[in-house]
Image (tube, rainbow, N blue to C red; front, side, top):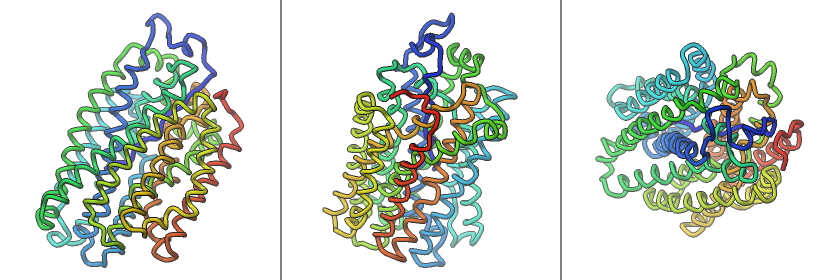
Length: 444
């Protein structure tokens, strides 16, 4: 599993030939064609993300940490889960250097090969009972390799899509990459629900859980070809030549655009905190502290993700009418209100769980659909590509990397209300970051 990318810079500081969807002598770029590549790539990333996340709750505590109780094993598992987010900025620095030296094609092939290898390695992971503590180290190493590889999968396609979107439909095109989140969750949850619900416990833990990781590898191969097809286009090469997608040194980007990077990393915290509050955390709570069948809850999660998908689409329509900043602040306020009561619904049985999940996914879709492009628009053209990649890395690290671990630890020590407090802190960070943004390149 990997953690997905936050998407994209959008800038009005472009010439009319770019704003209107044209570039030099190469004619026009169809945003719809770019959107296909973006959607496939993001769905692949999020599918990997959720396959690993679900396994972190259902599989790894028993397979890798059987020597401790279930709660402690899950906390340990979430600790390893966070490693990919921690090392991902290192991967970005490494693969930006590869990009500068050998080109984007070489970077994408190398990064996705590493990602696929690490993912398949997890599928073959022996348990603690067979190799002892080495199972922990192997899982941690594979997880870190996934994070490093994810640093190299930043392709700039979401940036290209946003730059070529018609001005009156920027919110609409901004939400397209985000559709990969519910799409990836739907497939991952449905796969695990099928295996959990139709296999004996022994068969599932022996071999059933491994199949989604093989599927993840296959999807990565498809995503690789979809991305390479776009990267090899004359339009993409022209954007590179015009420095719109030029990889810069990470240190130089921080030196020149550090404030924009940090504000951009904190702006989506409300949606990223909610992201784990309605996906990974409730799965762990239900699995550990209720009598709900895990297969049934995975079905609830799958159905709720469809509501999230519809809400992401709605976010594009709303943003083009009221502005992305207005929508982001409004949803942050709604998430803050949601945090005050909703987590306690997880103790309300199937009805309470369903209400929590559906409401949560609707809010998540509205906020997540537009959360990534508002502040990142402040990057100058020279540093847009690398700055957006770093912003993505830090946003997921701050907002999501330790979220399942923190939420589960807080809720077990102080009750579910404390998990709501964690969500509230993310909403406050979003409102502050948007308010502090001093370079609103996007004119709502």
